[in-house]
Length: 78
Image (cartoon, rainbow, N blue to C red):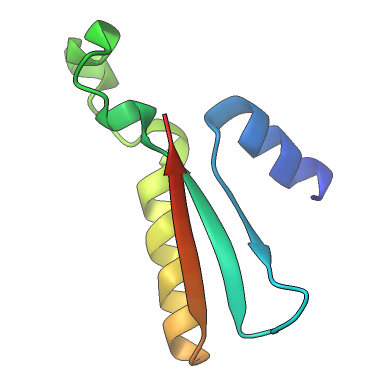
């Protein structure tokens, strides 16, 4: 991981990494804590956004893969 990737992962909990065995593929890890309906802090109006720009980033990752005929394994965690 680059320093920037490690900083985003440490702060927001998402990342992607290309596979070493296939340059067209990558693993994408998403932080689903923002979707956890048992996290009462998320009920505050100001927190109902895209934390850390994760959704926008995910859309960009998928668009780039699609343009390059790539693929991804998507994993998620809370």
